[in-house]
Length: 310
Image 1 (tube, one colour):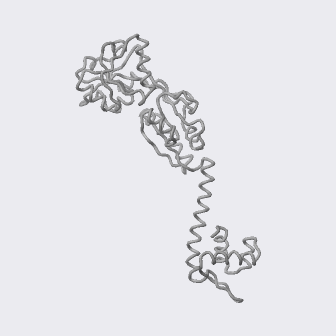
Image 2 (image 1 turned 90 degrees about the vertical axis):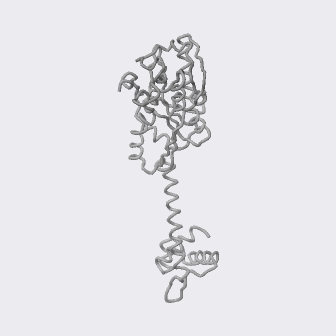
Image 3 (image 1 turned 90 degrees about the horizontal axis):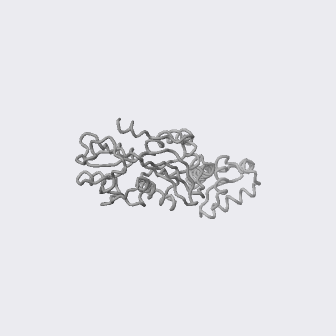
């Protein structure tokens, strides 16, 4: 069964006249008749009955016409979607993101994306930086919104958010809990709880870079890859954990009833930049369309003093 035979049959069904149908299709009548015969032979049923006076559909032909129209409509729709996807007007986009991206990037960008490209289906996946980059590499994500950027030439990137502060996380009974800020050098000799570097390389490196700048050695007593687990650990032991300021705020650290407190780190303040990262060989046009919806001529910056006093 060929697609052109379906189109020819539908035209015959509409005209019920071989001459007019052939004219519409820019075919000769013998050629149109041959196409119908091939279609009927492939189906094993007669679709059209004709004599010298009239042309009409058989019962099988009437039923087949409705199904043929569905097939042709689906093929037309498939062609339209394929063309729209190739042009970036339709398709899918899988975006990974972290907490700062969800608050400072995604809200406005998604509104613009929906308004400007309503036929592109965007799926969102909240992950830490390491898992996002792994998903980007294996193709399960098209775009990653992460801390820092990879140095490999396999990826391209653009900075979206500048200087996201890191804070210390301690329990309510810790000696730092009531202090407005703590110099980073006071972490010398203080037992810390830290995550594995592969979970968020940029944050890990920022913490140890600050330690190197103050010429201290961090003592990592425990590891916890989940920010919630870190908060639980510091609430029962005199440990110091680390979190981005947006994460600390979202978890309500310092709020009434919270078992952990976010404390500002000073001299230096460890910071992170938020980047959009995508594959260097990316072929999905929706990636560039989404990036066009992200306004960042000058990357925004989070004010730590204002955020902690809010």
